[in-house]
Length: 385
Image (cartoon, rainbow, N blue to C red):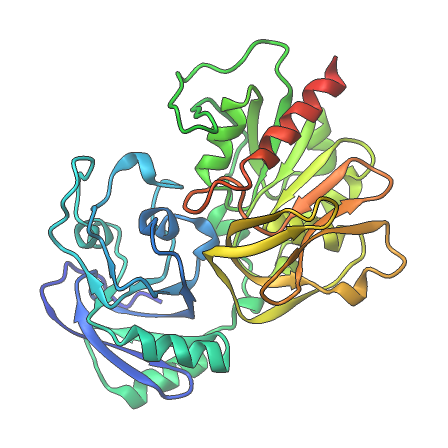
């Protein structure tokens, strides 16, 4: 909710969780009142990529890194056209960045987009509550700091599982994507590959820009389509392969995309990332469940079962595929999370369909998994020859 939004001078702001826990901070973002799901993230870098990731739609993000904002904000590091977080919560938010690439301070950027931000929060205590009790709803105000009223607002806030985010984060029309970057982070020109490049159709559930940049940089011709696109509409565009991207919320809140993927099985190669991984699992008959406090960070170890190799991965999701729901299904587990044993990768045993729960595009995060996108594009190139 947004009762009103104005620019912010320095004054107190209050966050209250649904359990009544209250945290006072200094408002450096927009003024107003908001409710949302509160999650914590353990990444030490990449705050701009995090706040512009559409997967954080509806969520107030607690940064466990002691300081953010020190390198400011620049257009190149954005993962979408605007920030999607409901609020930024941190121990210290720097207002005077020191970096040659910075074009704005983080507080200026957040105020320009109507996003609240609280600095000087006790993020250690806040994170411990979320770790022990799980994800909680919160209410944030910079205008009326009554903790009892805010606690009731938090308890009355909608649960994320009841929301349908597609109308907020997905494109309305198919679009060609031309911006490119190589897996070694060399910025390429904006032209696409040759006419023989494999056509990758990306289903936009809140896709991050660097996934698209890397696909184009690897030689694919990329088209991005709305999440509500039907299987017939997908096939009419004659893709060599389909990638189902990341996005926010409960995966069962994407019924049209699940139906599309189910109808595409066996008709075109498919790869899924994060939410796309969960959607593929649901399309094949599996179940998903909500994790206690989710996986949010750039330090999650994942084991590739066939090779035994461990990759450090970037993750951002609150849901996972239920292992006990795979019995009798044509799905094979390919990767597991070494923190909690949850499923991090699946492969269809009959069709060219694979998916991973984490983010291989490394924005932000380690580069261990960049090869996943390269393997997908190479596979499509081989099939087209």
